[in-house]
Image (cartoon, rainbow, N blue to C red; front, top):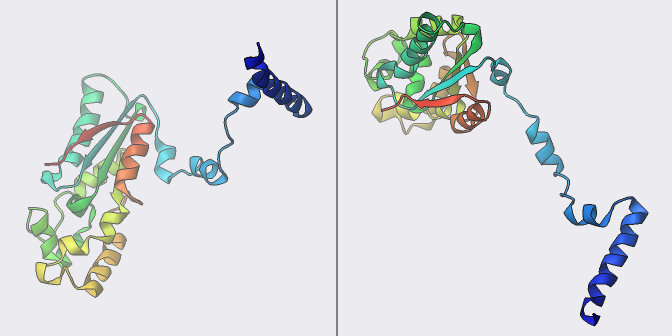
Length: 212
């Protein structure tokens, strides 16, 4: 009996303290610490694309390599098949195309491709026009989320400039600035695709990798 006395004394003191603040002992023992202010504010941060997530059919097609524009083509096939085969309306679908790495070249406009022929070479489709321009326009009209990685845009000069210019800091900085201004209509920039993919899956978008 004497061995339990210290525990009873501790619980008695805890109950007395709890009574002064309106908390029962079990509540005092089990109460979770309040979230830090920065954690609470982070939970409320939303990128603009998140407000467009709706419907029951949700999918994200992601690629970091050109792969002949597979992510863009699969997005269109997904919407077409859902509508024509299963009778699912497009407004009941949220489709995202997330591009980073070399694949962001599909989001550059024709002026960028014409000014820097090395873009087409890197994308595996040499030429002065982006062959995916019309596909991107169609997807934008169909309310597909077209997201480009901001980190990849900043690093784009080191990927798309001619090899001898990729280490020239002034040229790579200039290229990145041009690239951001030369994105096709409907394309939205997110800070980091790796984070956006996690955010998308948290919101029910199933992940499909369209890389090589």
